[in-house]
Length: 307
View 1: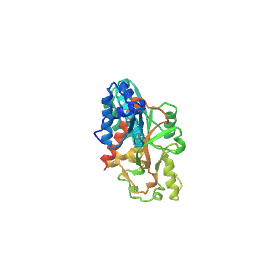
View 2: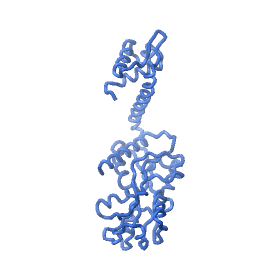
View 3: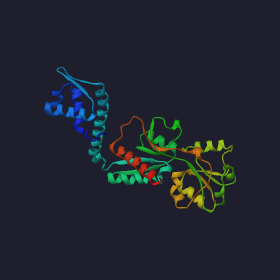
View 4: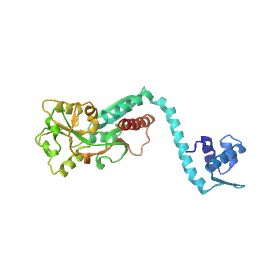
């Protein structure tokens, strides 16, 4: 964007276009007619095009003016919304924000977003609700959650919900570093192992099931179905020496610090989007909009730290 274009240029251009006459627009903005006329000319000089044709009957948009008006109005409207949100931050005080969190975001991105949000709105109470994908999407749809953050589920579970993608992640199979099964490179080699497998109402189960079918394998007979992080770690690191299939985000910190080790299995087909789910066609409150922004910033920060 040309940095010489100022808010006053856009405001004057929009007012003249809507009023149809320079003198009417000048009155609306409490300006003199020569001042608003000069402001319009300055804008046209900056852009290098004629936006409005003037005559005794008034003004008329040129083709270039019609195009520019659309984006000028959008820009001013967005700025006004931003200013209003800043003004409304005072109303965030004492409010409660209900956030649904699927396992893949609870360890890394969500804590970063919460920390940033509370710096901006320290008096807001944030309530984090965990559960299955089916349960949390139902609660979101019913209005019992403000937002849901996690992996996108099958399309049939997303009815009446919007989705804003933050990043992609895949499922990993992890085990204790001293578990001999860590040398496995094929899913078939896990046939006799105890496996922690995602339950039927989880977002990642269909992806893992598809991978198993593509490999010509049935579902593991020796399995415990859960997406509980604490339970999964206990079984993997305990005497049961289980293998855990889980979204990478749940165990990213464990892998980085060497507490768990990822098996070198081809699970590339399990990659899918992680993002923000909200009720469609609903205008977000100020604190909900602000939390969405902190999630987006946390996602960018997280991706940047891995580059």
